[in-house]
Length: 110
Image (cartoon, rainbow, N blue to C red; front, side, top):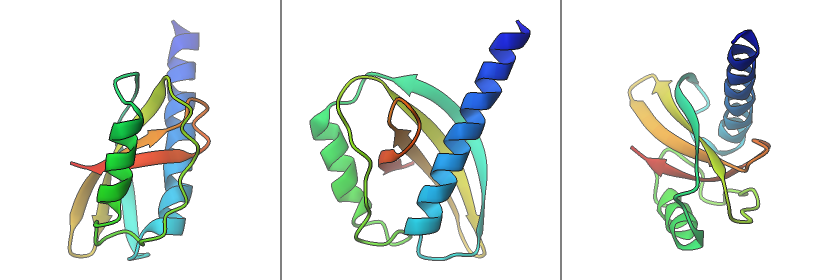
């Protein structure tokens, strides 16, 4: 039981770190804080959904336009739902990370 808790906490920390690095590079307003709401995995996404989310991200006024995405090679993704607190706004975005949680492959607005 203890090892399960440690693995879950480690996964959440790694996801939070990866999303944090992504935000540093891609969010427009650099004054913000984050709160991790959920971390889990999914197989329910395919290439067309990833491409659609990337296209929609290009219209998100809170993010820069030329985002460098991680590689998506199909299969399981890890998602992290994050609350982003800025001076005037509170945003919730779901970030989809590669299975190693080393890069963000897409995100969606919630």
